[in-house]
Length: 250
Image (cartoon, rainbow, N blue to C red; front, side, top):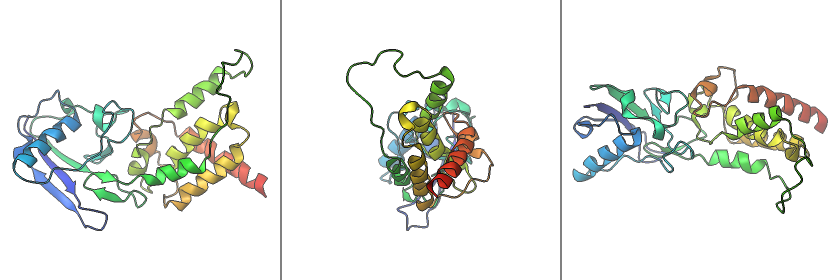
């Protein structure tokens, strides 16, 4: 395939940045390549010409780590539903297509360079939640802590969140509600997390607000963009838990 790509190039958070067009570097792209492999090819060709390669994040390239954060033709992670950028393949596009590639757009995610953003704000939210103490010794008796299947399934669904930030990038308010709510649902749903549930909820929501993320206005673009299909229902659960914890604190 021969493609034309427009890539957002930005030296750092203070630079204005802008799109740069690449055509010659995108000739002969195989439909069997992943999207990141296509960018690797483009970078090799840019390097051969003595030009600066495109800076972008990647790690596992297996849809697990969430670092491959970029907006492709206006959609976080690209056109395929429930797919991270590293799992997106070039067969999703056609010969002659024009592709626009941008970083996450959020005040809380300042651009480091090109397509790489600083997502430390997510770390501060996680850290505000503290930790859960549990016995790590020998395996407990099978029935010593009964957990219903519905509860365990709900916790596991929330735990699928990989913290990529697509929810923030998709939200018109740059809200991190889906991310924060998923982490809270993961820890608060199971019995081990119940003792600190109220304080954890207050602390993590407070950290989210302090980091500069916007509020949720129920567009649910976050749910549509999430590569792990985290349900927006966790946001409603978090709001109920926050209200309950706030009144209990008073």
